[in-house]
Length: 115
Length: 112
Image 1 (tube, chains in turn cyan, yellow):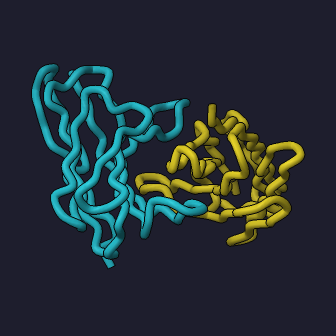
Image 2 (cartoon, helix red, strand yellow):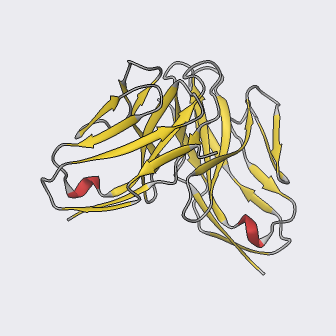
């Protein structure tokens, strides 16, 4: 089983360039998430989608947009990349987005550098 | 607000040593608590969880007990192995915020 698949694995951008990070899950999960991981700060939630057709801001949404394309796919877009967005990005999914907190399944991450 | 504070690393141990990684949290209500593990080059994986006070989560020889009185969820293992080398994240799920909040992670290196 593929689980959660992210592309690309690595990306280097120049300041001001745009790009989209792709994420797909094959577990029929309702909820999907985008996190960024920075040294000493753990994971911080950028955006999440509790179900198909809905998206909500997380802790650090500025500079990002998301699209829940269908139940399987949840993309993250940087419209005008900045050096502060250099980070490792993780996509995750879970069966549902409420209750007592479900197990999250993570992709293997995208290492993004903005020069 | 909601937050998770965990022991700063890095932590370096010899094989078969006892491991404790401290984790405390602040939250409204009674959140579910988790430990996730990240092996090199991989995404996070759920290691164990506890959903109410005094619950003990356990997996792969790791244990953590939900202590409401001290708002803690410390991770322990009696005898670590080289294969346990990874970054460990404590997290809680807040029903009010409807999202996981992660600690900053603790890097563990186990030497043979």
